[in-house]
Length: 466
Image (cartoon, rainbow, N blue to C red; front, side, top):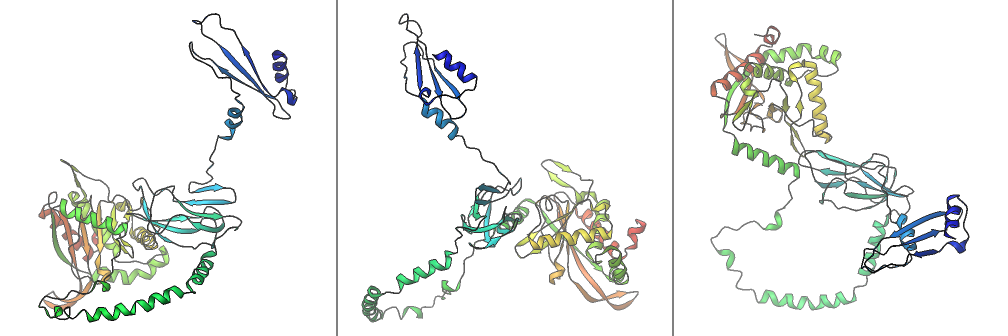
């Protein structure tokens, strides 16, 4: 019988429902010391095609064996297998609805703060449309919708700390179940508040103690007459949590002060020739290169020349060693509404004026829009900070770790200067170099700043390399 059934299953024939049962075949034990063996064969009827599944139990000597039907195990074996298919790295699909999740934020970033939702429940979103923003200690990252649909609900809340893969919103492709109920929820909430019979009674009871309290407060009146200063009421103060970017900037700047032996040296630059060069060629420059000629590119080229002549300023201390870097990556400090960022110009020594201006404009626009990436801010061997755009006359900038120096530019002011024995007005700018005195001596720092002064006052030196 069993052999016939096996042959029938192998041939692919169908089974009658009567054969869909469990058959047991036992071998009698010869002695108690011998290992008892048993096997159970189950033939499962699956409709059109027959499947034969065999379960074998091999108990050890001295153990009992259960001959309960294993149909439930076989039926549930395939049901319990779950397979997740990720169509996108930032979405989780489940039929009509799908989930928008926090994307990968970078190798050095493990979590972020959900800063703000750009959409509301019930709003329709398109593919890759931002629905929320994640604020990290370096950049702001958008959470995009992986598919077009209607936002049903937000799973996370503003201010929550989220990690890559955290669910943020549930979106419906068909738009069914969208929670436009935000206004309707407010209406029922108003209805229960409309009947206020019990509160009216409470209000009647409240005025009586209120009248009694001032009667029992004659002593507090002489207290304000004390000579102690009166502090402003706390109702006039606001406590706002710091953003992650602001906390990161604060930590790095304080670490810089605690680690480096900071020292600042100053000089002044006559901007007459550089401003004249810009005025004479700004139109031609813009027509050919499609970007305006600014003053920043002149200072970048001057800093490159100074770094090449004073390589110690481009170096950095690493433990007991000094790392000399034979390339120039200049960080440009950019102030944004969310905080200070320092995008990096890579391999500046190979750039001309037009390439420097284009790269600065591109990075500054990304920084202000909040779309700058971590890679565009990583590294850098030297920093230039232009406080003059805000009207700063003089400052002592702080080094951006792990660099060893930073150049501070300031506002251009017309001042009387002695030129050829005559007092004439000149557009002057103070420049400052803050450096790590553990690595850079005053001699190298002064020579570095002097080189920048010479190149800016006479840009022809760049052409002649003198």
